[in-house]
Image (cartoon, rainbow over all chains, first blue to last red; front, side, top):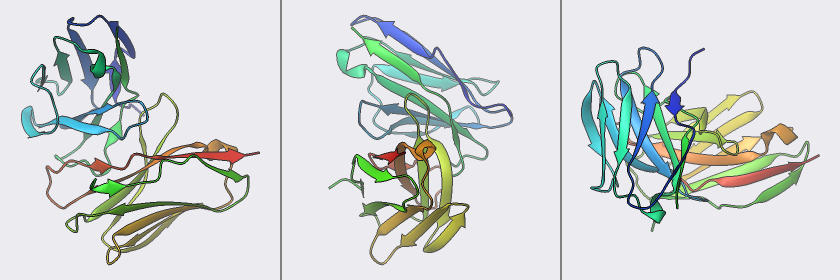
Length: 113
Length: 112
């Protein structure tokens, strides 16, 4: 069965650079959530989209932006990267706007050096 | 105080033992209670979820919710080395757009 696809799996960037993370939800899923998980930390909610519209916003820095496209894939754009942005970034997808029974992707490991 | 508290462990138990993992929470509005399993370098995988209070059983896994005490548990029977992972509890209230609040996760090691 198709799962949530995230790309790239690993990314190394220098401080002040820009990164773009992509998330391809499970087919027919219309909701995408982005989470950031620091080392030894619980996932922190960043932002979510339902039917291509932003549905909720969490602790996402102003340097980050995201959108959901017409094919429901989502991209998280991160600018002016800082060392503290190094983390695992997960997206999850679900059907119908809720996160109950959502499926998580494998994550993108971002390392800022 | 964080909304969801979970002992990070690590918790080491011998193979075949019963494992008990727990979380406490402070937000009485939470209605959905979930347990995720996360292997190293992988995304969280939903194990099971319960709605409101009560128990739910799925194979070797049993989830319990005690809303009066704001306390949830996950029991793993006949634990296997393949159960070694980080287990995260997570909670949400009823609103469709609500995000899930995760615990920090408990690292579990099942010793062969």
